[in-house]
Amino acid sequence: MVLCGANSAPQHPIEVVEHGPMSQRRVFIGVAWPYANGEQHIGHIAGAYLPPDVFARYNRLAGNQVLMVSGSDTHGTPITVRAEEEKISPAEVVERFHPLFIKAYLGLGITFDLFTHTDTQNHWDTTQQFFLRHLEKGYLYADRQKQIYDPQADQFLPDRFVEGTCPKCGYADARGDQCDNCGATYEAVDLLKPRSKRTGNTNLEVRETEHFFLDLGKLNEPLIDWIRTSDQEHWRPNVLNYTRTQLEARTLRGRPITRDMSWGINIPVEGYDSKRIYVWYDAVIGYFSAAREWATLTGEPDAWRLWWQNADARSYYFIGKDNIPFHTIIWPAMLLGYGDVNLPYDVPANEYLNMAGRKFSKSRGNVISINSVLERYQADAWRYALTALGPEGNDVDFTWDDFVDRVNGELVANWGNLVNRMLSFAYKRFEGRIPEPGPLQDEDRALLDGIRAGFDSVGSLFGAVKLRASAIELARLSTLANGYITATEPFKVVKTDPARAATIVYTALQAIEWLSILWSPILPHSSQKVREMLGHEGQLFGRQYTETVKDARGEHLVLRYDGTAAVGRWEATTLPAGQALREPAALFTKLEPDTAAREAGEVSAS
Image (cartoon, rainbow, N blue to C red; front, side, top):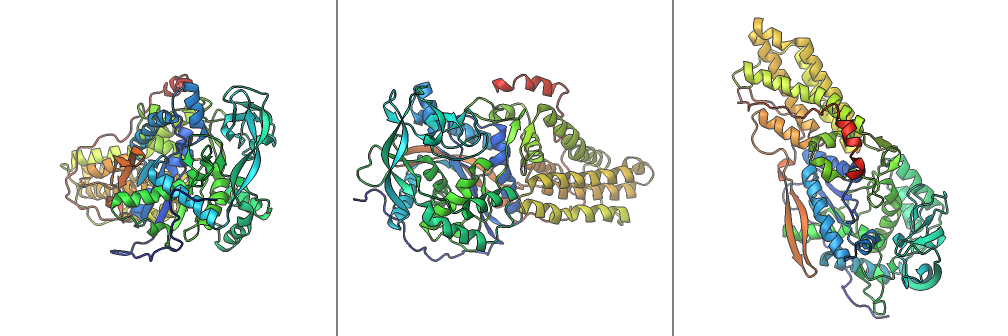
């Protein structure tokens, strides 16, 4: 066997040296790589894309050094399926949808340090390095395998080119590698009543073909040792229980990582020109390759090592529940086989956000496009509603009625109302400045103590990736502040005791300032507006921007983030009396009563 292509990566890491002041902790956040075959829907956002941003924003504010990466998966068979349906090339499909992902993330404020894609020279090189390292260390082997062959198309069918009946639960529209109904994974040859998505042919054959296999059986015991010794009790029960059950059954076996197809990364071994490295192997390597690409773009090519080869760094992977086996078994196995890199610290997989009991699916047309709804509603309205609905422990149904109720009844009526009435009152009655407070009374101190405690209570929930609970706690704190206004009645007191009214207003504004920081991981856009209306200069967070990167495979658009402004701002600072306020404006737009009925009629067209 003759090896060719990229050289193997060094067997031992270079010494990791920190430069400048030591950070509290380094946090790596890997976000699931979306297939670039259609616009993303709100199920994607709620499940895997908004939660990591909330978590990342909190960690930056808390002083941690965050590296959050992802990118478009350009090699998935859903892309080639769509390309064939539209009679265009897979590259053209990617070129259409990759920029739409970036547009959605810009609109929502998803602060990727790098969102790239997998058809880059860096990713090809990194994937081939993994392949050759695994081959060299005995974790890859070549063998023959039975696969489904379509005589009408005169080719073997990759997994997603086949559909049929699930062998586990009997679901009639199961995919060739995984059932959307029960989540089971299997080989395409195990499907009952298989049919070709390419031709519709049901008279398919099973033929032998040679492929490379990742020897998961050889990595079963190392994975068990990792699970037992790394204290994974902080994992969500659905993730931990599934992983332990699969590993302790000791049924892992070789899994093919190549396919007979022309779209994908070349196998760096001679004699396999008609085959490609398959997407499930190359996509997860994107976490590693994106970190390396980010480091190169920053001008410090070895900076990725501070997150990947630093024992004190923690790695989090945000995914949907259908991706659990790939991120708690297969990806850790690949990392163990590669060596000298950190394994996952946590995999906070979400359940599904459904619509009327059905799973959102862009390939099946059951969607509410995030790009579409961002044109009609505020980004923070979606950020709040999807966080409050977060499917962290079970599947959750989305309805337009619920969306309207959460925006109007919770966000606008509670937090938005508090900010609007107090800032408007202060701006009007205290000459557009933050009033000078007098001595604080017990009720003033009780409010400030309660909100200040939120930096611990809310911070603990954010840090534990309990984001739905954090929204509940933030709503409670906002209600506490509203209750203080109701009890102290500054609108009446100002007529009889202006000095006392000034103290009440100052106390309320101080609470609002702190709340704006506490809310900011979920509501970054409106929190920035609050700070500006309070008279503060500068950005609480950094800026997102796009960049066109050139390499040996051509140009590709990336999304980047400059987050230096946010580091270390999770603290209860003192609001300066006398500071000029800016003219207040409503934070949120109240939704019209007919919104739900109108949108429910448009869902299928979104």
